[in-house]
Length: 287
Length: 287
Image 1 (spheres, each protein chain N blue to C red):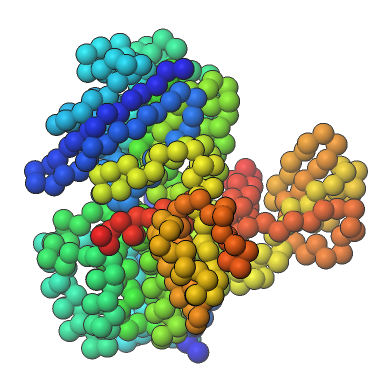
Image 2: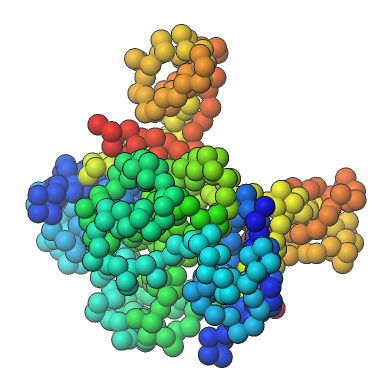
């Protein structure tokens, strides 16, 4: 299995530190959610991994080789986001762009491309610059699902999509993944919806990786604990508490920790991934 | 209770018919979700209600009076969307804009404005043109919650907001509504999230109002019906079917109808509002 290792990346814009000692591993055969608040550094991280931006420190390795030192490795990575594409190619028509992609990538999946154009009801006679926000996203999605790269990065792929097109994207992504397992890394704010798709999660907050694990392992540690305040408060010091609420003499602790040893007097309820994310990143903001 | 009656609106852009015979009533004291696919005509409808655009046919009445014939009535309506505001005022600073709003609207809620600026961590020294997509949305939300109008329309208010800021918006909207009941009409694609907030729903599709009712009444009629194909198929002709799936000799019908008289051999399951919306508007698209 191929893997990308991200090692101790540091990146600043002017005086603002955007990434601080970011390290993580992205393995082939998984669908990752890259989650973070606005301004957390997600797009910067994706640009550095894909060699579109330089970090001041650290490196990105593909199977142990630095991606900056081997152009062939970059063929295995593909990033779609709004910024890069449209400045270069905005007068080109969609159909012509797809044709060029098929020439550039000999294994570009033209059958899937035709299927997706029909499914999303995309007008390929339009110039890229004339696409609505929703159809710019759809254009990016089609490219990302059809290129033969092994690691596909989608930065905010569902921006401006209505519920029907989001639903279709989720279905087509899973179908494409089943057909040819590879790696997808999606950055998005719609955590509740993608929680059904992704199997692994990277939470970036304030330029640091706060969580890197499978969705299963993450949600196994995400709990709300409710009970009489004297019972619950006794455990607050031993647990990784990410939020707290009081109601009368009841306390609710939100924790990211192993809670298997807690007594039955404390009522345990699992937190959804989006709720965990909100509590965890609100907390870090307050520090 | 004040009310807005929208009567038989017709609107075209060039050859494209955007609204066809649109009629509905918006009553004071409710939170409405205005739901529709991209291009369904939501923004056009909101612009016409708020007298920022003219319809070719039909009228908008406020307590029976045509809003075009009485400027005073328009004071009771307030629409925030991205388009209008920023062309006029883009060099103004956020703080100065809020000050002018307070002068223009004597009952502008300055206390709430201060609270929201702090809660959303908004930098009011920035010029409007320098705001990120997320903070443009937040700026609009703050205005909308603080103006004294009785009918507040928000067109895509949560565009670009991360999960934390969306969560905060939902909480602040409900708080503001409890504090001073008025009417909010939200257009959005994040149906699953707003389903918890809204009490009434307007579904616009292909320029027509397809559903106008309370959320409770709508979800009471939204079902999936699963059973042996021979049992289920017998009812397909009598029900308003919006989707169908087959698996082996089982059929699942998605319906928008009263299903109380169906036998127990058919398994009934409620549809979430977002799922209902997707099925209903996919179906209409196919016609």
